[in-house]
Amino acid sequence: MAEVWKARAILETGESYFVAVKRVLPRLAKQDLYRSMFEDEARLGRLLRHPNVVRVYDAREVGGTFLMVMELVDGTSLKSLLDRAHERGACMPVAAALHVMRQLASGLDYAHCAADRRGNHLGIVHRDVSPHNVLLSRNGAVKLADFGLANAKVHQTMRTDELVGGKLGYLAPETVLQQPTDHRVDVFAAGIVMWEMLAGRRLFHDEVDAVTVRNVVRKKIEPVSTYNSSVTGEVDALVARVLERNPNKRIPSARALVEEVDAVLEKLDPRVGARDVSLLVGLHLAGGRADPAPRTGLESLSSELDAFVAAAGGIEYDMGAQPLDPSQFAIGLDRAESGVRPMPNDEEEPDDWYDP
Image 1 (cartoon, rainbow, N blue to C red):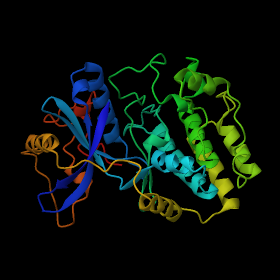
Image 2: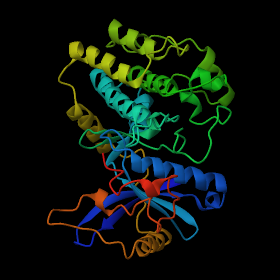
Image 3: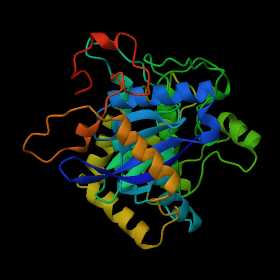
Image 4: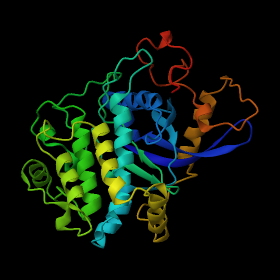
C-alpha cells in the first residue's frame, strides 16, 4: 500500500532532523479507498502521543500522491530481528522478550483507551499487531507503528468485520470466523508475537494462506517451554491466557496484560529494560542488515518533498530560543492548506487540541 523513506527535515533555524516519509504507492493514490484510509491513518496518528507509539507529524497530498511525515525510529523492526533469530533456531532472551511485550502492550493500552479532549472514547483497535509493526530503536525504545488498518470513531472510512485487515498469521479466531470483534483481537495478536519471540519460530504461519487461516482457529498451541527450556511455568501460563481462543476467557485488555507481565518480570528479572533491547538491536545491526538500506536522495521523492515544503509556505511558527522539537514543524491536519480533510467539527477545537 505504501513505501517508507528516510529523509532529513531542515528547519528555518538551520537545524535538521531525520524523519520517516511514508508515501502511498502511485498506482493506489488515485483510488478513493486508499486515499481515505491514508487520511484516516494520518488523522489518527496526529492524535496519538505516547512513548510506545510512532509519532505522526504531518501529512498532505503532493503531486497526485500522499506523503506522511513521521518519527524515524533508528534501529530495526522486530520482524527483522526475529527472522534472523528464527533462521538460527534461536529464541529471544525471556526477560527481554517480556520487556518488549510490556512496552507493546502499554502502547496498545494507550490507543485502546484514548479519548478526545471532551472525554469521548475514540474506540481505537489497531487490527495489524505483528512483528512488522513493532519497531526497536538503537537506544532500546519499543514503538508500535502503522495504524493504517485500525478501527476508530474518527475515521471516515467504514471498517466492518467483513473487511478482514491484518496479516493472516496474526489474526484472532473471532476475526477469521467473522464474529464480532473488539480490542481483544489486538491482545490475541500480541500473544502471538510473544509466543514467537519466546519459541524461536512462527506459530500459525504456513506457506499456504488457507492453512495459515485454519491454523488460527484449529492448530494446537504448544506451551512455549516445548521449544525453549528457559521458559518457566509461570511464563507458559501467561502466554496461554493471552492466546485463549475464546475472547471471554482471554486476558481482557492490554492494561491487564501489562500488569501480568510486570508481575512475572518482578520475579524473573526486575532489572530488565531498554538496555537489553538496545543490546539485541546493536548485535542484530552489527551482524548485517536483513532489511535493505533506506533509500534517500532519489529525484522523484526529492521533487515531491520540495513541493511538500512549498505547500507549507506562509505558515509561521514561534520558534523561541530553544532547539526546535521535530513535532513543532507539523503543518497541521486541521489547517486549510493540508491535503488531508479535517475531522468533523475540527473548527471547534482550540489550536492545542492535539497536545497531550
